[in-house]
Length: 387
Ligand code: HEC
Ligand code: HEC
Image (cartoon, rainbow, N blue to C red):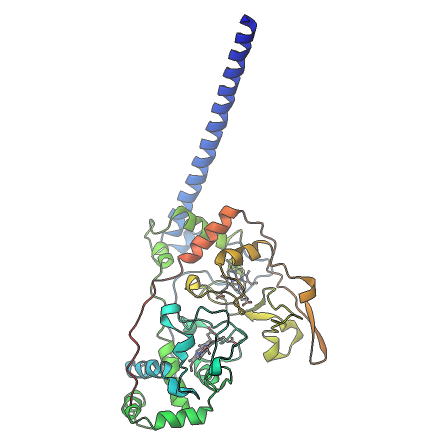
């Protein structure tokens, strides 16, 4: 009996000792983790980029510039900014008379209350026809060096005429759309103020809309405030997410600069060749086989507001997007090739995408960081339509 009691005592003491050791170890780990986050917080919010940890970039040296604030917008020499021109552009952006049905405006699919998108997988336009790509936000498009998912428009001026003529969008001949605006008496004065005389042309319509779009820029986000020195603006998760974005997760190889895009075209393994949703991307414009399945690297500013995500709106949550990257962007072999106009075409995933094997916590941290790039939604009163 005595023996049994002493054995129980020894056992109890050993367990307590082990438990204590383990606890000290976990406390130590927690303390180390915390001091790592604190160091990162100080470096990233120092207001001094030279104090930031080095980013992890691919050895192939992709086009890179450090993330940070958005630069100032540059207005082109042949379409300079004026308040009147931007205001006319805003009115035209909301004017459904540019469409064949007189019912669809640019703002129908680019709604400021929905992050200047429509938050749908695919937009519907003329006669409620569905398009085949997800509507992009026009926010910060001033910083895009080509427009659309496949880059088929070189400037915002060129771009503005395209949705008017697109049969699935506004379905109107640009000359007829212009004629309709010419007939609206109330526009004369607005064009005179914006361009110096009353002449209304399709080019002036496009110029005014482009000028307006260049004014739709994100104000300072939580991220901008944090790197500007507001060190408590970020939670620990957001700090870790920012660090992962620049290092282990290697998002920076493509989503970089203040615009969070290097404006390049990359194959993200999303072209779904040989399926109903096949999209050859940039190939459709350049006809180069190397461009099959490439899409423009989109900006991640305001990204939390612009879902569903990717050119085909195929991801409903940002968690799913990050999980996809974590797995190294798997692409089923049956979706990697197709026959298009008699030619066999193959999709080749970018070498910049690798298996990341992020933990659940890291995925949540990245998502938390992406959230800091969005700014509060504004609900501006739409302009009065001229009569
Ligand atoms: C029926 C919905 C719809 C309408 C109406 C519409 N858009 Fe779009 N917009 C889209 C879709 C979808 C895309 C992406 C299409 C693609 O990449 O092929 C897009 C892309 C854009 C882009 C490219 C942004 C970027 O970062 O590349 C701009 C700018 C734009 N639209 C401006 C306009 C303007 C200006 C008008 C009015 C003249 C307009 N849109 C009318 C749906 C629409
Ligand atoms: C090889 C270049 C590349 C890398 C690396 C990369 N992306 Fe992307 N990203 C793209 C391209 C290209 C698209 C558009 C693909 C499409 O539309 O099908 C995209 C789309 C996205 C979108 C959807 C945006 C939208 O408006 O629909 C998110 C979110 C995103 N990336 C986040 C990330 C994160 C987070 C990482 C790091 C884990 C990352 N990306 C790494 C090229 C890249």
